[in-house]
Length: 162
Image (cartoon, rainbow, N blue to C red; front, side, top):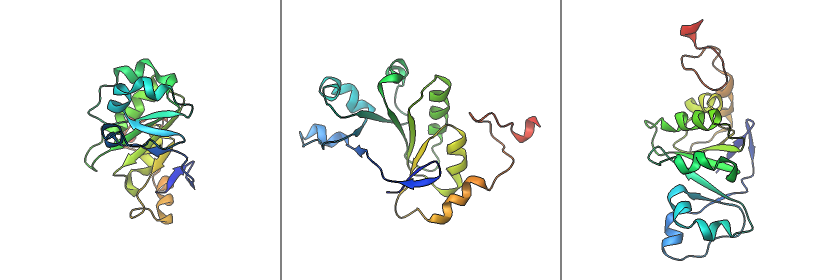
């Protein structure tokens, strides 16, 4: 899957490990991994014992209390957009930025071209796009808007405030 960082396609050094791998006692891959928050909380001791980096994936259904109390523990927080109509990930990213999170905030899931600029404005520092969806022309979406209707973390005033 293409990974956009600073509006450029880069190599992804992280591997997403699903819940099933832990439930079935499957081999966890070497290298830096991302695990769902529920898996991280359930297997915290074994995950923190790894020498490689461990990060989490969260979604709008997760209780973020444990995350917000330990922000410095995660070099990357992936926020999943399970469906186009689910915009809770934008609010989560804004919350992380407001709370002072300095690591990588990654958008995953149902990411379309029309969301790219707003993802960046809300604090996402990387965006993972499905192979079937990605085209190089998508990158022009970052610069298409000059006026915005929503506020974001970038402090650009929305049109209704101007």
